[in-house]
Image 1: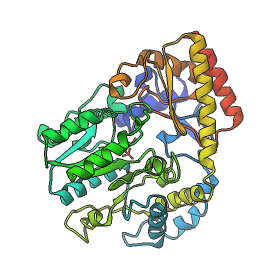
Image 2: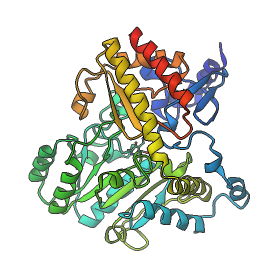
Image 3: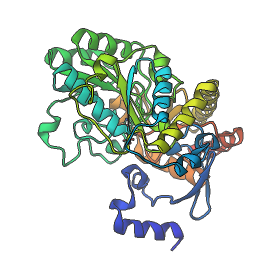
Image 4: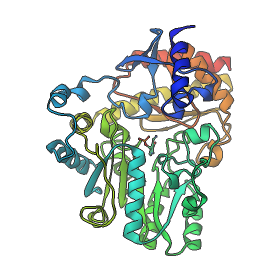
Length: 426
Ligand code: PMP
């Protein structure tokens, strides 16, 4: 038995499915997981000392690559000065200021420990603010695993066919309405049927959890208009897109100002961090200013926040990075498309900035409807073929590939060569 296998067998004795998050299980591709030994830059090395060019990027956070010295700069000093106080520190102010600079719509910001906490808390605040209960989310969008959001969600719930989790009481999700992404008529209809009842619309402005799907021209604008007209809070879940599409996230890219925003992933530089924020008037509902309670022993943890601050500060001062990241993604997109055509495989590439998905689908993928008809078996074959060539792609069809500053021209060349070989073999 090799080391990976031995570790995974032991893991299964103590951890459900041997993993601390279902998407890591490799179940979707019918194999045992890679057990990571270490990583640097664009490469992951497993316990068998096999090296992979990594496009998972920890599911988004590692925009500067693995073990970046920029991100960890000064971190040992922080560790030696104390890792948690349960009292305010200056670095929390520094990161809030920096986030506000990038996202001016976030006038007040609260740090939390994950994307799940950010969305869960934002909804509570929106409900407190509007004094309404219902929320509208979109099919295939994932907003973390809090009860009321675990309805027709994406990511692992799509991969494993668990559209609604067991253990979520029907009562809790009764107030969760589900709309179709990129279908504004559907949104209008839902508002019509639930007049003065919808507290918030929460959306991944560029969904990454049913694979990457670009918003149709005008869709986000229409959401902004209708929520304003109907007195509902518009929440952009930018846990993936924040600091990924550009320094100002999706809202900066598309020029739309949501009422509230949720962040995670990149803002922690690879440590467990999330944040939510928005209009002052709304965020003043949060305790201790207002009566919506939300708290956290480790929220704004100095080590995590320092790693995040280093990342964001670098991005602020090096915004040309976004063009470079997109250029790399375009190189992959073009080459993949060329080889898809050559191979005659029913597939297409969806790309937004530095996020992309190869959909094994014969039609354009613009919403959950099409995404869900993708050939997941063929994706698995593609994944396995790529892995054998030393390329680590997301483990499932319904996830995005993320480029990082650490991906080199040589990495891209190797990836393209592998993809050509694998596509032609399908
Ligand atoms: N929102 C979005 C858009 C996400 O992609 C994720 C995680 N993939 C979350 C929320 C939840 O974040 P976390 O896993 O940090 O709880």
